[in-house]
Length: 110
Length: 113
Image (cartoon, rainbow over all chains, first blue to last red; front, side):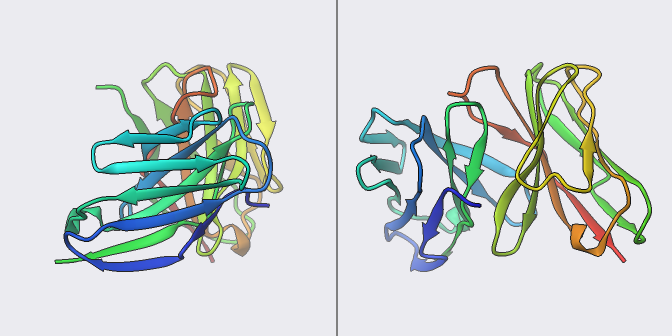
């Protein structure tokens, strides 16, 4: 069964707008990670947030984690056409394995 | 530069045949993983290894096997390919601790006819 579930499944925005994706999970986690997948490619790690952290930034990315609600969000600010990809959250239960959600397909229109 | 490679990138086979997908990493990572990706399911873990001679079953291991004879390679074998195993397969690796990101290969698209 999947631990993380992303919402929405698909998101289409204009270049320059912000994109927000949400992830919900079911059990306790060690950390939560976000990955990006361009069409036909492998996944690329974006950012990791630990269970004792509430917010983390990396460039145009902002991730929040609410362990009481078992949810996380990924915000991409000032989006670009090159941000078009699928985005996955993945939860680490502390034994080195990741459980992935089904992903959000982001389309950024020029 | 260190990398993780998969071969072949595309494979078409017939039901009942044995198929082996290769994964090779030059990161010198202890942990290696195999996933399959299907529409609507995200990535699901098939098998994983925490070091040489260590292998473990993941969520969807039935019909698959792996062996780890060295640090660099974790081949995935489909003992008797089934149409339900048509999928895109990804190999990944990570350092020893669980705080680290996984590095993914480019994937192998397998079609079982």
